Image (cartoon, rainbow, N blue to C red; front, top):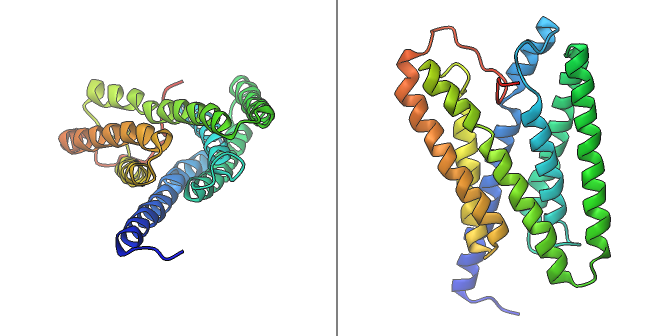
Length: 235
């Protein structure tokens, strides 16, 4: 089969958007490293919450499954980025559990086990659906819901920034990476005509842009020695 020039350009643009999304996602995945260096150095999770990483792990696992050939044959970019993301989130959660106080440690361990059980149930149930379109829709709706939930978690940060008039708890590169990744996969989803990809990432792009606007608006009100914290410093 010979592709027309139009189809070739279309495919190139779609792949470019997917690759860009993967690159920006990597920046998003590594952005909390400085926070965990602080946690390891102090031997305490302080006031930070591990819930964003629980949400992120669940989303990465479900989205990875949605992008797999068993669910959708044209979303390898989605599968690859979420596979890497799941590894990062799992490592962050383990580090958090190791350094958390006992009550928070038990809670986080329980949530981690719950996420793994939920994912196992989703995989088992979806494989029982023989109709491929129905199976894709089932996993797609779940992926879309968890992704929107993950993107909505920074609403706590937005509220905190407005209340304190400080961007100490909203790292610039985290917000920028979120915006760029969401926008890239929004474009990728549009070009791939996949509403389960472009709809949640469209929401993420909007929320990411709001964070950037707030960052620059409140930047002058932030203290000089601000340090990069966890995604959401809210228990």
